[in-house]
Image (cartoon, rainbow, N blue to C red; front, side, top):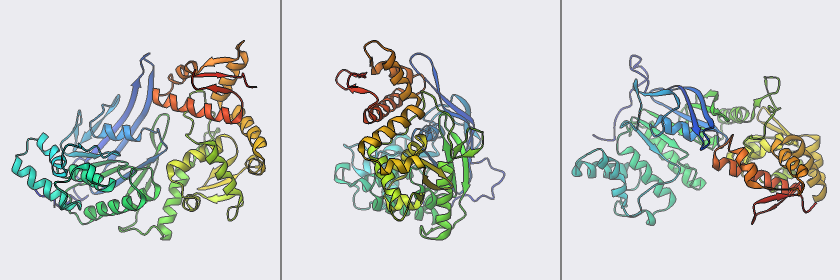
Length: 443
């Protein structure tokens, strides 16, 4: 079967949709049997002939959702259907490209691409014919005998795409496939994939991509899903009605980018409406991975020309060369500490944020410390425990166990490391990394 095929059009209304998730939830069980809800009650349909992008902050469960759709993970509740049939494991019509290249170093390009066909029992002659065709169509003709170590990152990811496309997938699932590449390489590979899709040179009838790049999502997708977190779910959906190829500089494109930023940075308010004030958080809140040094630099930039305390988020990201994964945690922390408000795709420093920008180092630490002890329950909890203990010391493992009631082991470790770094900077507690002990002994 050739890779060149026509896609089924959306006029086939009698057929079941290519991919559908119905009330999908996922709970991970921790060693002490406490359930951690990662995804909650997700309904989703991938229609014929469309590309859907999924955006959301790190830890929102986007990759988990993709693996459930691929049949690599079972849902805890609900189910997934491929062409009307329930998915209980990997499905031949669905292929996936991962963030890491995941190539076998001892196999050539041709050997890596043939691997999936071999697992399907395809004859050696047919495997080679289809693999050579896939390698050619993805732009690697002439490198069939090369090993992964001989290839650049972009070329290695092309091999990953060829390996996925060689099995003639009906559905292609992409888990941040361009995130490990430099900007120019990612753009080239993305455009090549779009060309194959638009020109119908691949038989794929639907693509779902998890992305961390807003402009990438607007460039590729017909629909964009915004994922909430803790637990993950679809909080908003945006239709993109722009023909391919799309110009990133066009007013219509920029308007959609603005809309996506607004959806990503708008959180439920305390009164139940959508607004700039976040809901009250608890000790187990998934704190953003935002270094204080980057936060300080961003606040300083916002006070300078041309911003003067207020900025359009897409413009800010472009001018300061910030990726979505870098910018969103900083925005979350600024709001969490009361240093800035984010609304309608814009950021504006509060009075406290302006005072922070104008202060010297010692005054900044004091402002940061006061904000931590007012707005971050985990920091408050650690300081209270240390205040109440006779020796004013406590092992980090004590707080880690508490966090693991709410988060995965990996996330609990990251959140604890984050609050320790913030607390040490603010000088509200000390930390001995050798003994893994928090204390007040230096104060």
